[in-house]
Amino acid sequence: MIRVVRRFRTLPIRARLSMLVAAAVAFAVAAVSVTCWFIVQGKLYDQVNDDLAKMRQRPGLEQTLEAVLNVCAQEAQDNNRIFGNSYQQVLKQDGTVCVNPTSTGRIKVSGTDRNVLSNAADGESVYHNGTDEEGNAVRVLTVPLSTTEGSAALMLATPLKGTQSTLNELALILLLVSGVGVLGAGAAGLAVARAGLRPVDKLTEAVEHVARTEDLGIRIPVEDESDDEVARLSRSFNSMTASLANSRELQQQLIADAGHELRTPLTSLRTNIELLTRSEETGRPIPAADRKALLASVKAQMTELASLIGDLQELARSEGQRGERVQVVALEDTVEAALRRARLRGPELTITASLDPWYTRAEPAALERAVVNILDNAVKFSPEGGAVDVQLTHGVLTVRDHGPGIPEDELPHVFDRFWRSPSARALPGSGLGLSIVARTVEQAGGEVTLARAEGGGTVATVRLPGAPTPPPEVPEAPRTPPVS
Image (cartoon, rainbow, N blue to C red; front, side, top):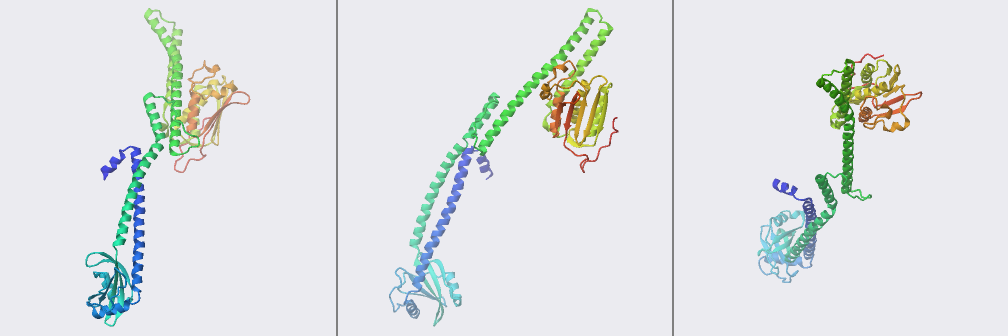
């Protein structure tokens, strides 16, 4: 049985569908045929029972039976047959059977007949199938009687040869019809499977084409009004290939942009290192001040490369890796940690903070990096001696600087990867900071916006879902003293 199931699973879908349709039709036809046969059998037996009941009610039967009982095995006084081709006999209390000489034959007495005789007082007649002494099938009506000699049972029967012949012919016809129906159902199932799976064939060809050529531009035509499973599968495939094509395009763009961004610091590093190397080879030392400046430039370029590589790694991390680290985070603690780093990078700035408690679900390290990136931008574009205002209220974090601000035409591009304002290209940075901020905030279920502030400068707004108190199952983290 297990081998049959395994073998069935290895068959093509068309063959399996055809076999399943044929099996379902065969089961249905068999059920209908068997039901029909039993219904016809019941109707035919009812007709035979009616004939036997009419025989029982025929005038003159009682006198004939009295004569049969009186003479028993001898010829009865009334030799008129009640019905042609019928059986009549009486089963006596002592088990003796008295057969009417006009009877077609002798009926074999069964246990059913003896039960009727033993329960003659109940007066219940019984119809059942039996045989005569020659083995011919007959339909028997056994009726309890009360005679002068005691209880007896009248047994009337009629042959079932015609009835059984009709049932056999009906069974043969139903068998032939069932066979034709199953074969037709198998052929129809195969045709329906071919027609229904034609879109699947197209989908298979498309998948194989993509596997061979890596061409993600292929699309499967789908009717707009169609909404069946195959149409949904085709739309899903089209959506998947479109997403993969877009992902590949973004990946290629990311590689191109990363290569462009890496070229500048690498070129500068190469130039500075070549100067230092040439100085050593020629024996002409570089002045101490210039050498110090070159080494400082090398260090700065190395720092920029490390920052760029870190940003690229952050963007390359998969969603599954992020989901494993998500937990409840105290946002005010994260902002305070980021503020400490921002104050080190802009010691000449006045950074004020007003933070209310707020708990959200996010990856702690990624969320802190996003807040640090926002504060870094505020520090980078603030004038010397300027101020940065930070406020966290009801899950809304705002960071406002008093720098030159972002032109209106550049606001739509601030969250694009590697995009940098023309006025800021001379400043250090990779152009990935705000892109990482947008991605991190969106993964935490929030949103981030940048806008021009009234009176000059830029205001960054981050909205994160959450609550002012931690969930019951999460213990509140130890509070860090606020940074003034």
